[in-house]
Length: 177
Image (cartoon, rainbow, N blue to C red; front, top):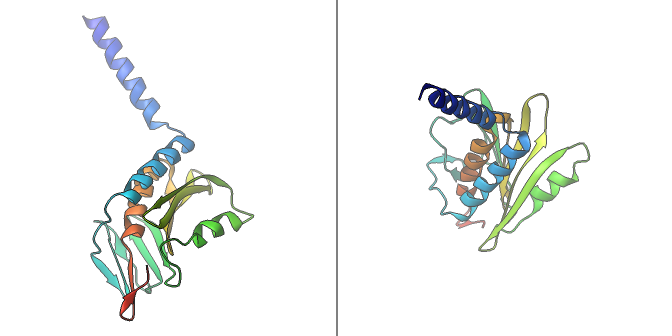
């Protein structure tokens, strides 16, 4: 019985360590899958307003001073997230996605695109320095970016899509969709 218990404990430990050392590619693929699910789910209700922009701000995130309604800087645990809102772009806009691929210096690791009820979205990762990866999630004329540690890619892409999908921008009496 003792040998079997040691074998099981050793196997379990090895499996846990293997899961912790998932590659950036695996983390990114899983993160994009999570972002796709969020993209198609019902959007979170906005709970924060900056000027004409309202959006869902997850627990623990703070809006930084100096943010304006089109460039909102969020912070959580020392990490910075930048939410860009282009009120001139509609739900089907591919502008931010096209700009991602227009940067000749960017080394894109992986992206995924999504469409749902006339809305275009995407999520992906690009190489950054060291163990960090630049993440981006977008929906129509809204985009959010951050630098992420390898182990946080899946969670960050999901959260970023929740934020970007929740954005409302009031321009006069009519919201740009």
